[in-house]
Every structure is written in structure tokens, then in C-alpha cells.
Image (cartoon, rainbow, N blue to C red; front, side, top):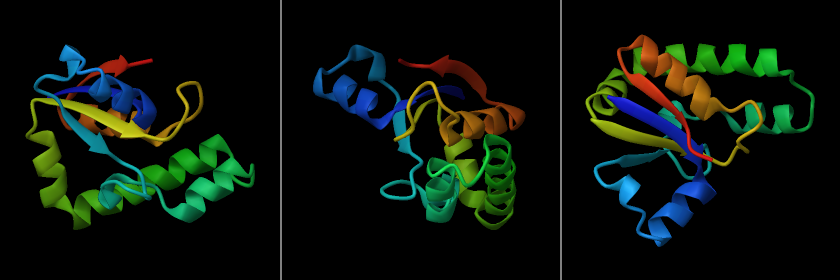
Length: 120
């Protein structure tokens, strides 16, 4: 499995422009608002981090804890994701800030995937 990450807005621009790069990719939205909830942070996590009430370190630890529980409770969804050949993981986070799409990519690497980077 090859993984790239990017913002939802970048992925949408790529789709609208029929970017040939996306050929063969499965785009996976990992937001709590519109995406795969098993890979998303909670609203409380997102809002606390945005408001500065939660540090990057706290957010990262809480997200990893949530993903470990998700892996145990939603194992079939993880296997389905890991079975894909090329994946573009998306969310609303800006490229230059802490982001759960890249945290998730790191976790997937530990499961055997290859992370090819952030598309900016």
C-alpha cells in the first residue's frame, strides 16, 4: 500500500482538474464531519486543539489512543484500508500544522504501508 496525504481542498482541486495523478487512488476522508469515523479524531479533540486547550503532544497521544481502540474494535475497516494499493488520506487540517492524517499515515506504516508524503 502506498499512502499520500493532503487537505480535502487540495484533493477536490485535483479531482475538479481531472489530475491524472489520482488515477488508481482511493481518496479516504478521515474527518469527523464527513469521513470515516473509525479513523477520525473526536469533535472534542478537534475543538480543544483548535482553541489551544490541548497541546500537540496531548492531541497526538489522545489520537493514537483512539486509533488503537479503533484498530481493536473496527479491525475489518483497518484491513479494508490496508488492502488498498494507492490511498490519498485527506482531512481539513492545514499542511503546516499538526494533523491526524499524517499521524494515521505513520500508524499505517507500522502495519506495512509505505508513506510517500504530503501533497501540497
